[in-house]
Image (cartoon, rainbow, N blue to C red; front, side, top):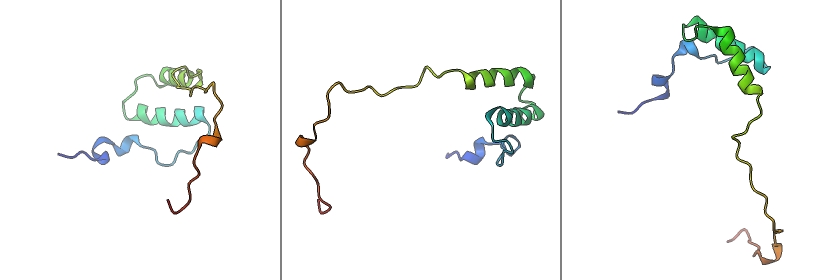
Length: 83
């Protein structure tokens, strides 16, 4: 049996048009909606934790490794549109 996205989402917990443009205000809008629907017991504490997580430096980001050798363009064969 196939599951659609509509099966997983509840329209009471989705905001299509956030009014806020700044992260703290947008988070507060989303958290207020979750609190209204009984999904969060303590919205202020939840907000503080989410905001702290969003402002913390990301350490789990994968950074590309730099090559120690310069790229040699002479060994590259140029391609034409017809290939």
